[in-house]
Length: 342
Figure 1 (cartoon, rainbow, N blue to C red):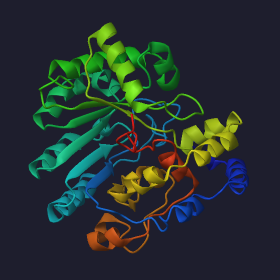
Figure 2: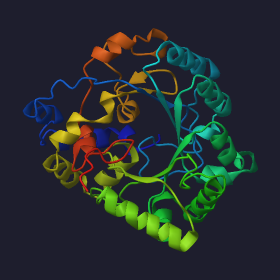
Figure 3: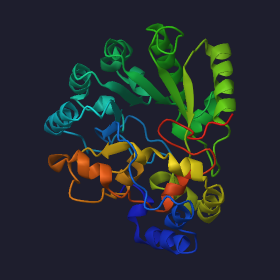
Figure 4: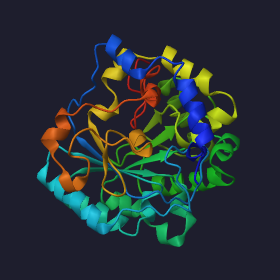
């Protein structure tokens, strides 16, 4: 049992809370956006395994060292065939767990690179310095022109380690320095290094623009570290973070905060309108969050073995209460805030 959602008592508690709240579908109706449909699908987001060297408190994937779910080379090959046949899928976003822990990770990245796709890897930073077999990852990423997207909860040790575990901040700083050494995040290098921030408690992220300035100033001053962009991501009320909300008694207040902050502009540009999320076993989902809740896409093309781009482009996107997390305030996506007003 990985998290409290597996407990029937928690499921009943969540259902009781949700029955009192305005449905996300109703909010979409009021905005003239229901049913929510794809806009222009250009990104293939692939979870290649839930195994991770960390066990972060707010991980919506519920990843950790004990997770055995891992994408096979055969499934990766099918993904490559889909990419080769669908040039509209111009970007590939590799996630985990720690995607680098999949034994076929480097082969997969190399094959995607040969297809001339833009590659993003969601690297937790500490994996780079966790074992000598990963020490050369910065050079590997550079070789394949990978955009590195890395979570760093804060620019100070205490808040980072509290969320991600003792020693994580120091290991992350070391990894960032190694990435900077090969050119990542350095102006004019063409090598993109983006950081991801998510709040440590039951509140929405502050202004992405302001936080980015704070991160850049502090990391440069204290450690000489450079990076390109900071992405602020709202914590989704699922998995470990849902456990935290329920145990701390914050669930209803947090959900009301998300609902009251619903932004139609953000709703109109949510990431599920331009991505397809592929699970480690090849199942297709509307987004990474629906994947973690096992909410498969609508229609017959629900696995990569039955992939039909035309059908997937016309489907209705499956929504539920957690979707408020992507549409609150400035909005939230895998690329940070959706409505960038600042």
